[in-house]
Image (cartoon, rainbow, N blue to C red; front, top):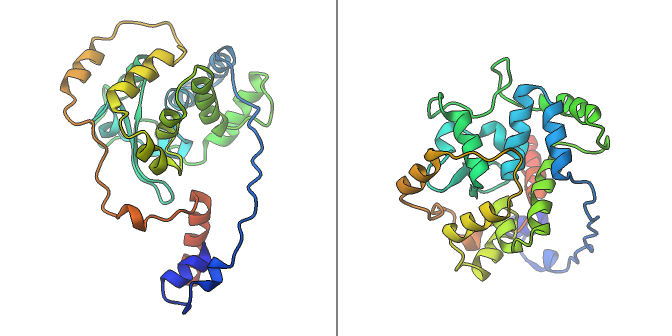
Length: 257
């Protein structure tokens, strides 16, 4: 990717260099550690209250901890029956559709907050910025879960639960914001948010006892635009590199500066 960018930026005179490269076979190790619903509930019970809310947010949305830490009140229920995950350095912004239970949970978190407030904060009022690691590790230990289970495993748990329930992979990829989202969107572009919302709500296994929430229907009635945002950067100009590679390249660029 670095050689390709060098040619695109005019640092080398020919594209022959990167065309001669051969990709190394990608050896993915199947994910085997994910939580059952009983384990997820037990883990939540073993967390202190502020961490428990962060864990629930991840289980309801499949979001990364960095995405949840940056989530603002205005991103909850703004355009879809769910949340908007703002763009980060290596990831594009996306909408995440929530099940009824998840929507109620997020609405509960923001009910007394202002639009620009963070949805999730530590009990001390500080934002979650890497502070979750030792707290989560301790909760995992108390819950009797494998020591190798980290916060990102909640994202895998979310995806695994949907896969086992038979949710189409295109929908799951869209929810998680995977790098192949563009391909999925071109192939399954006929899938709209209404269908996705029904699918997620129907297949999501509850974490808590369900309760009727009149705010859910009110929110559905007020949603005007369920279309995804228009990105200013042309699709053909978007890099095919993964988030990790882009992050490494940007870090190197800052060092050179």
